[in-house]
Length: 285
Image 1 (cartoon, rainbow, N blue to C red):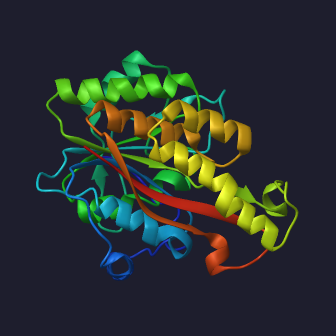
Image 2: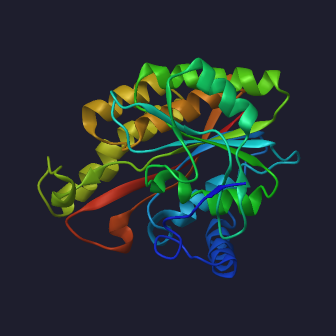
Image 3: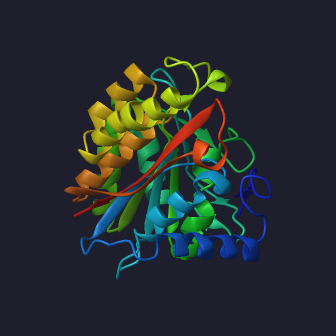
């Protein structure tokens, strides 16, 4: 079976299974001692910078999705898209990770492509994209036998329709799913052409305490429409469609509660005039 090759292994995250596992174990130690909910997790929001910057947050969100009954499928929404962008999906084959290939769940993917106008990606024809790939080693490590439905969805109403369909198709097919939305938050500074508060300490504090806080509050309220409108208005989520679709899907499969796992910025690791925010959130029943 054709497998989509990893593009960012060896640069944004380690290329070998041994090095990935070493990093994952270190990330889990960073989360040790933090309270873990006794609610059943259905999904979460993860960041997608290189593992050095945000790997710990993504790893610990995905780890918290583990419960007594392993999922059959992980549905992951991502990609840097705008309101007018098409939707993307890989509907067959597999995706390479350092821990082995993850098979695509074809039943859900095929039915989605019959219902919605997707651009189909394949093992040999795809858009280079970090938002989904950087989560795959974590998914394969914690959910060894789970299959994958990877999608790129824009910040638009169709993404919420897709979210509802995902929940309906998986339930009808008897497949237990977990859902992940991959997005970073505010991209601030000259590197990103966004400097409403100039530079220096005022800028980083504004991003942390105002701009990122607004989008995090929308995510914690589990309000997908608000996530989309907030991100479009204030540039505080680079993949708002992915986050909104994950929230909507999680709600359709029973999520009623959101729990914050972590918040950080790239400034914490590498102080400078350009920086990015990262949030980790888990949705539970």
